Amino acid sequence: MYHDLSLSIAIGLYFLATVFLYLSIDRQAQHWRRAAIACTVAGAAIHGFAFWQHWGIPGQVDVSLLSLLSLCALVVVLLLCISVVTRDSLFDAGLVALPLTVLILLTEWLLPAQNIVLDHASPGTSFHIISSVLAFGFLSIASVYALFASIIDHFLRSHHLNALVRALPPLVVLEHLLFRLIATGFILLTLSLLSGLAFVNDLFAQHLVHKTSLSILAWLVFGLLLFGRWRYGWRGRKAVRLCLAGIALLLLAYFGSKLVLENLLGRNWRL
Image 1 (cartoon, rainbow, N blue to C red):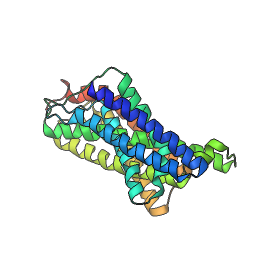
Image 2: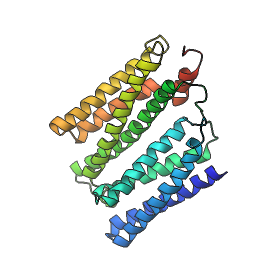
Image 3: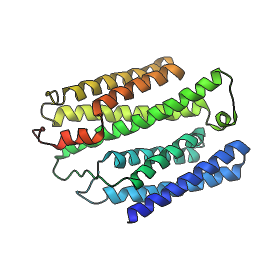
């Protein structure tokens, strides 16, 4: 009951923050921006409390896709809050991040709970599962930002600057957040693959070889993208295409978190 109530309050606060942030950008009004920041911080606090109710009880760690996507969204919101303290312009990306967070929490709130609890898995396997789904979550969210970056880039190239496009965060701000998410997801994907090799028996067995191979290919794509960004300053269409290619490989590899987790925790695993 408290979890659902916390989610509903967080949803409302994030929605208000989105409205206030839009008004602050559209009208260049600092009081609306301050209201957006206040609602975002309050929403993050309530969101964190709701998430703690899933993860704060020993032996009750919920690794369902919606739960971990909620954690990923919370991390993104916290990045926005930190950017206010550091006086970074990243907070404007909340115009994309906050509605996406509302959508994730709304889905978690409305859909029947299907908790997947790691009560019998070994610590190594638990680490592998959590890092795998978190990597998928962060990189999935990054793909959404990549799509928005692609849309903004298209309108800028065509000089079609309507009111909605002008209200969206600058492309450079969105790309800044995009590459932070990709870097985080890449680190988690690396940890997932390494922990899989260390703790999972027969990671290249017949029932897992396609997931492992596609995950490695996705790791190579995201690694190439990050290297190209660091070495050659890749951005724009090239970065978007590589990001979407990487997440497409991960979607093929994971093909629904429930199926992955059932394989990880089911009889096919000789742990």
